[in-house]
Image 1 (cartoon, rainbow, N blue to C red):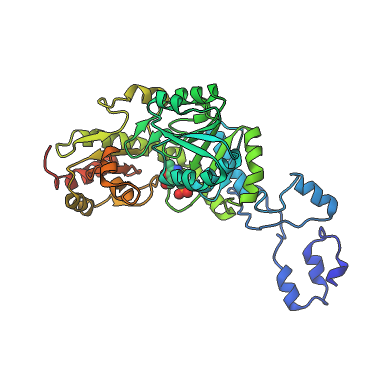
Image 2 (cartoon, rainbow, N blue to C red):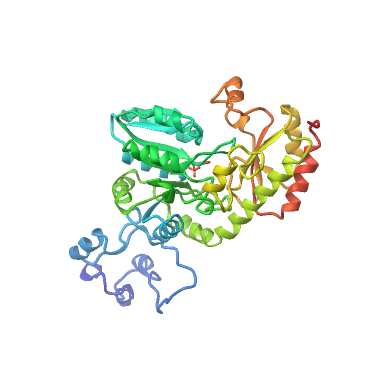
Length: 411
Ligand SMILES: Cc1ncc(COP(=O)(O)O)c(C=O)c1O
């Protein structure tokens, strides 16, 4: 009987009325379609289906030409919803939503380079992005030069005839140094190179890189966009033209975000502004409180009156400089451990950007990649602690840090 139903637009329940269909067949078809119209739900449904039924070959042509959804890796309504929201926030024309920040970064880079190209990258970017450059892109015949992007003359000097990409983040981790994106974009475009910016630390509520000349903005959505430390995702945003070019490889590389995570992500994005603004405010106030604490040697946060890049930060990020800061105490490993034990609210966590305040210890995080001397030269002393400010009541956070700081000698 099944074979007789050649037109799949016939509702499955008609098929099921036929008594000749056996139980093991019936159970595969029943309940798939709604019996009442579902109109305008307050939240979008999750489109888990990996594929949609196609009526005939003409319908296939229509679907594969972009006329409707038909295969999840190609396109999915939940993922498209997230893409639309990110494009809106970043003022980009189009976005691709990937399974992680690294999926976004690797998809964009692998798609844009060819053998013989040269990339100039900031040396203060996410460690695994550096590994991607050094281990994967070099295998494809791409050369990389690292430069200190806070010194624009170093970037200019690093450019070669075959430089096709300048790659940077805006706030260098963990010293919270600000990169002058306007200047970097001008240098890149003068050289005929594209400017790719990972804006994970900053978010579109601090800066929209495309408005400062970047060609592509990348995010680990795992951080502030997701915001609750429960979704792993990433994004690529730019012009229609560049996203269309990357899309072909995005399909082949296969790093698309699954519908369930995409649904959760859109839900998080709805309240992102409220969350992130509070986090920015907390970071600023924690920075001020730590700066005034006798146990703290110095604090790295660009709004502080003693920060050398205060003016640059105010020009690039007038709404706030993000929720990441770092500070240095006595370089005593045992005391730093004890400080972590004494903190009651704030936890040590291998991520950032969540709704709760967390700390990390850069010298420990990077100890397998660099020698102790290299770490010191890069400013990652034993006493350097990084904070990702959450959305708690500011006074509670300051009190927690202050009581735990008494473990250190006064400066
Ligand atoms: C600045 C930055 N970019 C990219 C990534 C990679 O993101 P994901 O872990 O979502 O792959 C991270 C992760 O911490 C990051 O901090």
